[in-house]
Length: 328
Image (cartoon, rainbow, N blue to C red):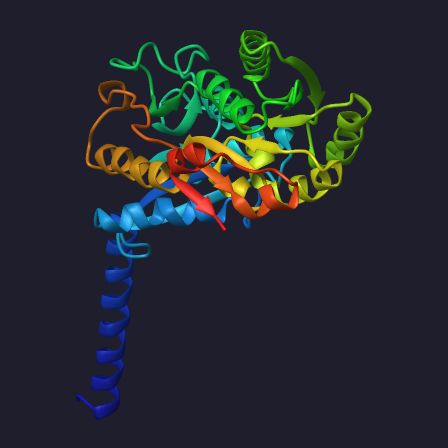
């Protein structure tokens, strides 16, 4: 005998089974994308948001057909190997990395999961890819010759403050590129008859001591090289450098927004959005070894006019006209 209760029970079971089947199908179609940052969840939040926007533009909707697994080292290089193991345990389909330090950690951890670089310095020289045209292996993405960009940055700083002869160059010795950066800085300074002064800050806790060293060395200007710690902790770094009353040249626009005098480098948000194209192709079946490594096509020169005025620096009109952005 079929009762109303049995019909309702059967209907409820049917709905439960249908829900579980639908949930299983959704989980099966979700592609897992790992994001590795040497910074914290708060920084570089802009870069992560730009990447996810790039993915949305290509049809990847979080929770529908894509799941993101972000891993943050909170500035601790020693945590990267653990984060790499955790991501591999999550069975991610592809991993996005934002600097040479995290790329090295991921390279040690896996030779099979695709790794996409977002503006890694000198990918060939660092041994991440065999060549730009034919990467080989499981790594591809975007690379920048930051040592060449650094030389250009020093040249621009010299134009803005030609009287500054002693230039402090801030380096992070835990960065695989620090020796290349220092050699490039010395060379650029020598061409301009400037004195390059080496200043090391490997962690935010060393920013204060670095600022004091800059003053002791009688520096007249500061160049901060491209480094994830310096970018992620840009507000604190600029706060501690501000008492020196010296012009500071940075690698990224975001650091000038935080109070630096000027920057020269690729558009961070635009480049990270472009990384989504690599991830999209890989999720659709492309092999990293078949995707040529690209370089940014545009570099932006940014000046903070408010900072210049506070330092008593008058920026020549011709230089202001060359700037891609002038922050008032």
